Amino acid sequence: MNNFEFKNPTKIIFGKNKIADLSKEIPANSKILMLYGGGSIKTNGIYDQVKKALKSFDLIEFGGIPANPEYSILMDALEVIKSQEITFLLAVGGGSVIDGTKFLAAAALYDGETPWDILTSGKPILKGMPFGTVLTLPATGSEMNSGFVLTRKETKEKLASGGPALYPLFSILDPQVVSSIPQKQIANGLADVYTHVMEQYMTYPNDALLQDRFAESILQTLVEVAPVILKDPSDYHAASNFMWCCTMALNGLIGQGVPQDWAVHMMGHELTALFGIDHARTLAIIAPSHYRYNLDTKKIKLAQYAERIWGFTKGTIEEKANAGIDKTEEFFHSLGIKTKLSEYTADYKGTAGIISKRFTDRGWLGLGESGKVTPADVEKIVEMSY
Ligand code: NZQ
Ligand code: ZN
Image (cartoon, rainbow, N blue to C red):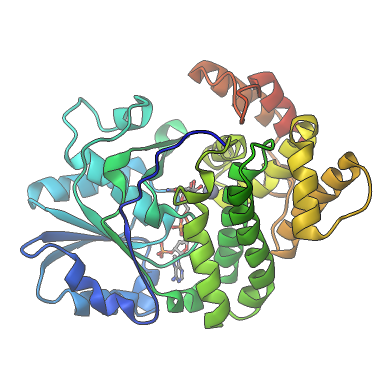
């Protein structure tokens, strides 16, 4: 196991009707900007619950943050923060609203030239306005981590950043919110969280027995609850387990002391930037090809995964590893998610070359747990995903 330091300061408030406790968590005399997305919170009752809980606060609102939070829209929110002298941000939404809020927390205290530099400088964010979240969509884990991903339509870019100043002060997780989520978004959440675990687990053995079993326990739980939650999103038992899996998958815990990959996400982000494909679906497109292409370096963990998650106890390491990849792809299909790029766009030819060139231009020359996945490998993996 590798050495590590682990600190996660976010307070989680989990359970039925917990949004009502919101006012206890926000510093008194805060001037709050409440941020939300395209309006789902107005039809599912979450907006009313938040407003009721915060009626004693000075609060203004900024709605309209789209899925894959867009830089230019967030720049309008930044104007509001500055002109209204906001002191606390409250994200009410899924990963997009929370990520957009993290960017704003950083941008509000940024003294460099243009806030987009926050995304390109590669520097960790050490200063940020305090913020909390009310999670409406389990998926990304953004509610308990310090990373965020932003999209810029103008340049067709999607880039990530983050740093220790961007952990939410608190996140309220009421699994009852799941009941209003459309099936497509629930499927996305399941595929995203599954891949988050895989990115931190599907590498090579590193003598981290407990981290492996943390990861496997999340995968097993997801496989168990996925059909239940897809059938009935108001099933509280399934919704609460699904929600907690999403948070635990990407709050840092399972990734301590182990090698991590994240190449699937880096390639996937490009598919969102180029074609607007939902984040989770880009992962389902790339992951099977990534594992097939890197079978040699990943086969021991793939075989362990096939055995422990999917019950393949017979055959060689390679046979088990391949069975594990097939099962992963089948799992995505069971969620109603297609796993080939050509099933999403007719304009897919040439994509592999574009992505590979972008990685070369950015100096991303060695991805994956060992830093050995080159832009030439990326080109082949994306091509295999056509
Ligand atoms: O905008 P509204 O109207 O709220 O509708 C949203 C949106 O259309 C809807 N929704 C959310 N909660 C709902 C609901 N509809 C009904 N009932 C509810 N309770 O769902 C749609 C998708 O929301 P979005 O926030 O975009 O989804 P998700 O949580 O999957 O977030 C995706 C974004 O997070 C980034 C992705 O790249 C993408 O930009 N990620 C962030 C990560 C992080 N910060 O750690 C890690 C991830 O790997 C990921 O990259
Ligand atoms: Zn993800």
